[in-house]
Image 1 (cartoon, chains in turn blue, yellow):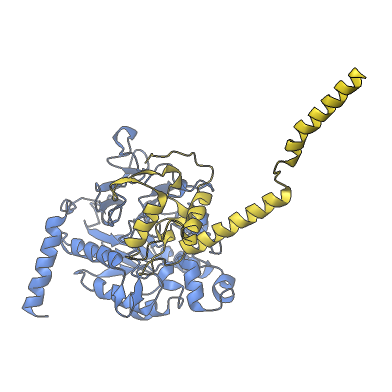
Image 2 (cartoon, rainbow over the protein chains, first blue to last red):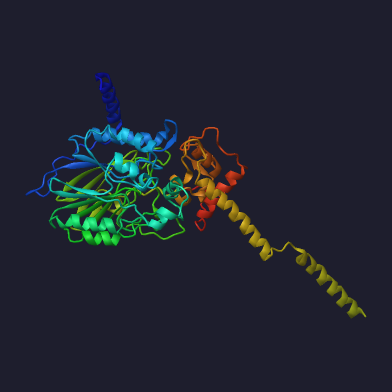
Length: 358
Length: 136
């Protein structure tokens, strides 16, 4: 790479940094596990849905979202130890989309841990992803924390293999959120067995962070904010003292606590989704503790989108949501309440009312 | 005789009063069923359009508005910030086609059957929500 290009990229990133309202410079040195852990941060980018139009044309808005998140993460100081990519890099799993997305991701200055989403999977059932990007499920240890990546978007063999005339038809069916012909996601038996064996080696006091694309609990079946065998996965995580599940897919701020497990949803860089409560024709199970994100300006293409900077405090996740065109939010585990709370907005008196009509 | 005449007049008057009622355009069950079918066919066409690329960039309405959520047809006409005036749902549909769907010049006319179908779908998905024109 020539000096000229370096300079150009630097100046471009400097421009982005100048435009940012909140560079997360305050993530340093939060102690956890003082006796054996080390402080560290990681960033989380999710759901850019890079969409191929034709030839070398892609949907501009989605490209810009991912580029902006990458530039901002590169400007974190100190640099995060790694970035987690939460899935749905592509819209229809096409090679053009995955290649184009990976070209953008290659600009990140730190290593990336990849989670696969249904939009990346259902065209070729993860083949290209596995060849070029990452394993579909795996685990790793980092500074005293055990990380597990799951492929949570599997479904019945019958739906996957027998129902659709072509691979693209299957992809299009799964890509539509409000599709009555959709099928609930699953981790499935084979992977649960693997998880059981993987966790057998881990001390019960070790903090465990699980990363999946779909929420590992049940929110709303109509839009597949749902993992059918969630309870079976939760049972495997139950013996551990500190467990956090980070997931993408829902394109909104959402968090929950089930037993010992804290759940955090991550922002999309592409577009925000409404909360399921806004659909009046069906019941939903959006967690009661979640304070909905305010939408500052729904007509701005970056409204209610963003990325997350995460640190671990006493083995618990502190989720710093960097919302573009909106006030950043911080969701952390409250030791007294025993569940995650939004540090600023949990008190109803402090809440910015969510903009429900527009 | 007089009594008989009076009765006859009364009977005639009653017939005359009754006749227009009997001749009124009554909706039969068959009519209602047909209109329901016709309406639902347009809703289904709207559903199809709502889930297809109406602009130039393969993006569809449902990607931001699953089940037409956050379209709020029951709040129109209202001040639409990006249009700078009191606007109809149709104006907003065309704004979306032009901007997120990158369909400059592909906007739909008010009487375009596609526009009517999109409106029918959005209203149908929001059925039961109180009408609140002008509200945000």
